[in-house]
Image (cartoon, rainbow, N blue to C red; front, side, top):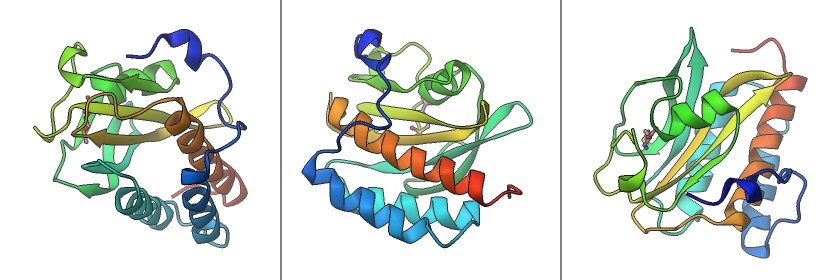
Length: 171
Ligand code: SME
């Protein structure tokens, strides 16, 4: 896991690297005129899964009745329910903070959905201080995710949060 002090900086408005700028633009264009959350998350999963290198799972868990429930994703079938504060997703959701894990096998409580996963990034989706869910991306490559990924993926999460705010009511 990255030293948490680097995660304390607000990444959501940081410059996005050129490799990511097209992906961020594509996500913005796909969701700007649509406010169906499931449809938008399905498209964002597809864009991320098909455009990021070395990614074997990209998708969302949604916060429902006190736990995380599997949402739109691309990749192998995954575990459906994750308790708060369990695994990488539950930890990010509970803390309402991004979590980057260089080696998931060293993360206590990691939930292995796909044996091919070796590193992972999870970013919470929060609207008006309320947890909506998490973006979760897995990679077979150790230490796949760095601060560039965190900044760009946080920008994408921010677009989703703004879309939710503009498109209320939810779901
Ligand atoms: N590894 C996650 C579970 C979800 S899968 O990666 C799709 C976790 O530990 O929370």
